[in-house]
Length: 222
Ligand SMILES: N[C@@H](CCC(=O)N[C@@H](CS)C(=O)NCC(=O)O)C(=O)O
Image (cartoon, rainbow, N blue to C red; front, top):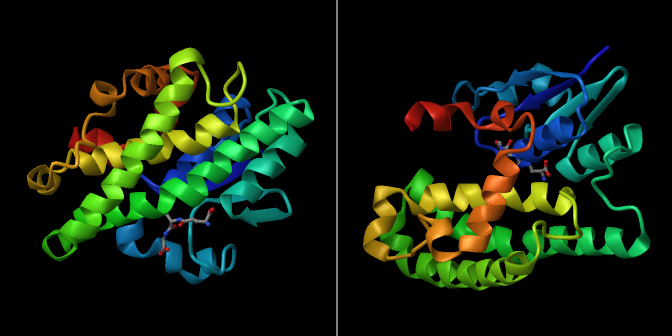
């Protein structure tokens, strides 16, 4: 029986799970959860993930949530291609990049994105500008890596790339929002300011199966 992924359009967490399934060429079916209808809070969904969040992965009797748990399950289940490295040094480099994203990027990213998508830009403008400064520091670090390397950790696509990629896309989408323009956050075109990151985004976008992971509501809005 194929694995089943419950996901949400535009969720960076769910996007990572989709990319892992595609990169590992794992057959799966997918159920798109409609947040605006509250499907992630329905009793049937809460029974799978009591936190009511996507992604959720089902594989036979196994039901899993929390993206890192899902990625590690997929890696153990189908080890090739390896997304978490083969040697101790490779594994450490990949985990370090994931940690860098979680501990240094996600919080300022949320501080910029949330007011742009959910409201409150006027009251939070100063905090957003400060958070954008932190994000530029992190983008500059990525740009530095990707100026001499195709991938963030090692010479192949890894969990480091699929962890970072959706977050960069989300920040860029928020940065291009009309409400962001008066703040001059300069986050709306990553490739323009950070060409090596732009080339890396394109590299990810040409991996097989990428189009199946792209948030459907972003396509509609384009
Ligand atoms: N720590 C969780 C985070 C998942 C998460 O925050 N998912 C969001 C979408 S990006 C969600 O489902 N939010 C719905 C809600 O919290 O009501 C993971 O790693 O999977």
